[in-house]
Image 1 (tube, rainbow, N blue to C red):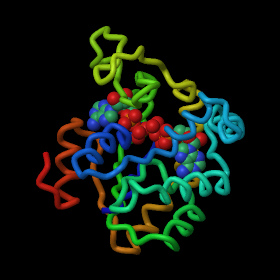
Image 2 (cartoon, rainbow, N blue to C red):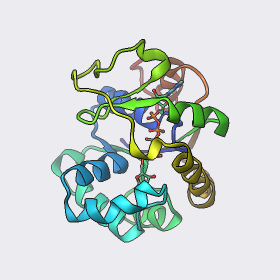
Image 3 (cartoon, rainbow, N blue to C red):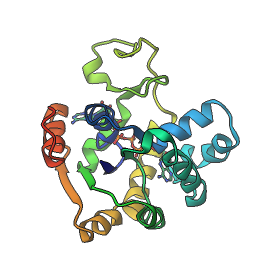
Length: 210
Ligand code: AP5
């Protein structure tokens, strides 16, 4: 199964993609995670991407497309994948469309005021990518999955969050209609519990896994 997850920053794409990809037995490919890994390792791609990410802007399409094309050529993508945070612009969506026939585009939507709360309270594991919120951590500072110390992402500062939401509206929201016109869009209300959102997505994908 080849799936893309759409939705604004903080909608819960990463939270859901991590579990659903495992249940479906396909790799979870998050362009944001790959950029952050490259920034951490100070690779040329990481150095180039950092200034865009720190400012809440999108990394240019040519850099992003090279990265995704390389990743999709890997052996573990043979039977499908779940793309989280890609595509994010019409040129990215068109380039992907030329190469692969997607099964579903899952659009997880949440109102902006909730997103600001979610992102400003988010804590993430820099090792495994698990995502938490301070309201449910109960004071815990370590990742429940791998035990590493949780951090706040650099781009989860209030002014960068606002910029990311503006960029989403200006450059990414149009993809909803792109995929609706292709007949593969699934709309999911992301403003409910993690479990309810997951059950809805799995039902829409035709999976019995819950
Ligand atoms: P990326 O890492 O993709 O960030 P994003 O799209 O902004 O999405 P987030 O990771 O912020 O949110 P999410 O929807 O995954 O939410 P999460 O599950 O964590 O990209 C970062 C940057 O990289 C971009 O700004 C850009 O610069 C660059 N980039 C990446 N891809 C690119 C591309 N294709 N082209 C160009 N540039 C690109 O949840 C958020 C919080 O809410 C957490 O605290 C979580 O615990 C909580 N939560 C989740 N679900 C629920 C729920 N149902 N109820 C209550 N709380 C919930």
